[in-house]
Image (cartoon, rainbow, N blue to C red; front, side, top):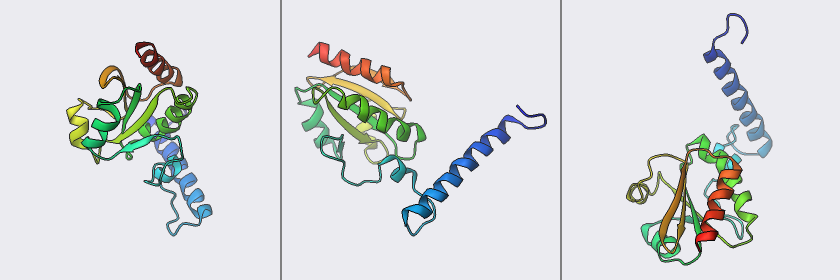
Length: 161
């Protein structure tokens, strides 16, 4: 740490740098706003996901159909678009899950929009990763995780199949 500079000053410098990068990226993206949205940066701006990408669950009925009554092992990512940790984890989860070639279904639940669903599944932290087989939750990870932890969760689901 530099003499005379506090930890707070360093944090503000890092966040200032991030804001400057978002400003530059926003200007280059041709958007009306000079700032590039964190959601757009992370690919979670509500636009349709690519084929084979995670399915966004929009209701308790979706959850029942896709997870609770499903036979396919399923990784549910409970996330908040306002959480930097959630935004950081989205591409990591997508990449790790794609390595399993469709053996596991990956779905996402926006805890801000589906608060009742999150509460009903005892989700109190974002992101939370829950693995389900046959509609039953078998394993859960909370908070940001390394790719190896996500891989381990998926592998544990496939061995319980």
